[in-house]
Length: 425
Ligand code: NAD
Image (tube, rainbow, N blue to C red):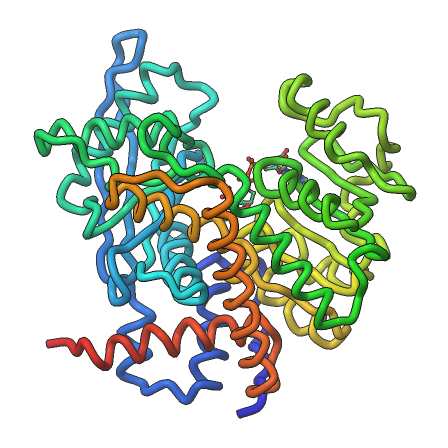
């Protein structure tokens, strides 16, 4: 069946609608049975809790927390926990579904979930964060578990919070259960290669996209928006493979050097400069940071936040391809224009799945009680990413549709097929 244009969405789509508009196109292309469609579109479990926490000044503050399990058809559900002021249930639901499709695209035996607590981690002390994280874990004892639902870091959380979650869960069970969470510190069973895993998957997807478009990486120019975990590793690894990274940006602005930015130097600078590129002299600061998105480069890597490519600016995009490091950097309304311009997009659920792939390896290693070398982790995750890319590419050829819809088709088909075998009530 041919690719169908998505319906325009008025105003700014909420993330759940944005995800569903792509899901609907893929479901139709696949000829998905209506009953299965209804099963797959609804989250299987939503838990919302109130968490009263004693703050350092003795006052009691009540925080709102959520965990949404979208699907456990392929296996235990997997997904990060976000600490941010704008956490709301609709967003958590969308992100949980995204995780289902992401795990299915890279063919790892996980369903999808996501969690969140409405809080401002920057305003909280370490003690307050610890009490909040432990309270959330206690409240989710019946949801979490290495064979049920496995949390991980997301915005506002990291190895520290994962260690508290593992400890709280382990205390409640009277035994150390390090496989109940991923993204842990190395000493607690974290995996080598996890830190760079998402950026590495972006690099593999970018090289595969260049190969399909017959672009020689040694002649390719790259612009990367966001210079955090995903963006900086993607930039570094692409540079190591011969590409010229002409622009990078972070919250302080965008930095351009026509001859190529030395990414090693930029990372070194960021790490000794409060985590930002402000004042970096290896490139010129651009007047308007948004201009980075409109550079005439071979590959644009949005690796910062959602909806940066949207109906207001999509016409100005001149990159030959977009490799989505961030989750949801392109709004659903912008898809049509990008496709009509012939820009190849390696979509988020494919391109940034290197992180969840190595999280899966962390869980596997914990369950084996064994530690793999970095080389083994990298080799296996590169293979998974490349196989997933090839499968999505073939599907896009078969259905004459963009890679984004093809990725949803691969994912939905896999989950639907598994559901049919497992059956329901
Ligand atoms: P991070 O916090 O490490 O880095 C974010 C970077 O983006 C920072 O450099 C920040 O300064 C910059 N930034 C923020 N707002 C910006 C803006 N408006 N313009 C330009 N730069 C801006 O986060 P991360 O872990 O690198 O995650 C980035 C994106 O990738 C998010 O969408 C996240 O959901 C997604 N993602 C991350 C992982 C992972 O393993 N870390 C996995 C999959 C997807």
